[in-house]
Length: 138
Image (cartoon, rainbow, N blue to C red):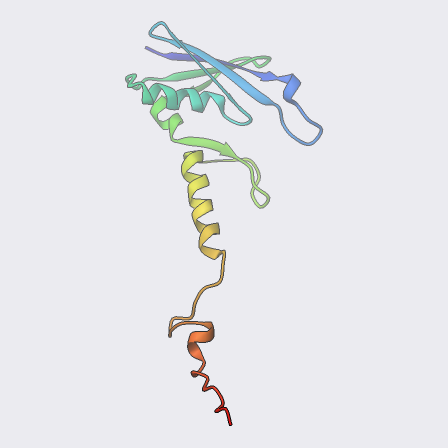
């Protein structure tokens, strides 16, 4: 059974320097799937289908205002990729990474760089200085 996805822009989310969010919808086996994204809502629907255990098939993505459709021969393949744009690379397709996992990895890298690290050779501070001997009272 071919999965048919319809997507359209949410114009109210468009900003002066940012693209608008898109919403995509599909009905598969009587269940409605929806997703919003700035770059690839149809791919998010594909991830939802994979998570629900729907058997792999082709996916046709229709975009409001455009003739024809984009065809994925496997929505499992579509679930594994997303569209990305960075400061150094223009818009390109890349492997999808779970945002929660990405955030946890960034937090872990950031946390390991915070604070003072002790030298590997031993303690720091007063423990390194020799003990002070009190002067004798005369």
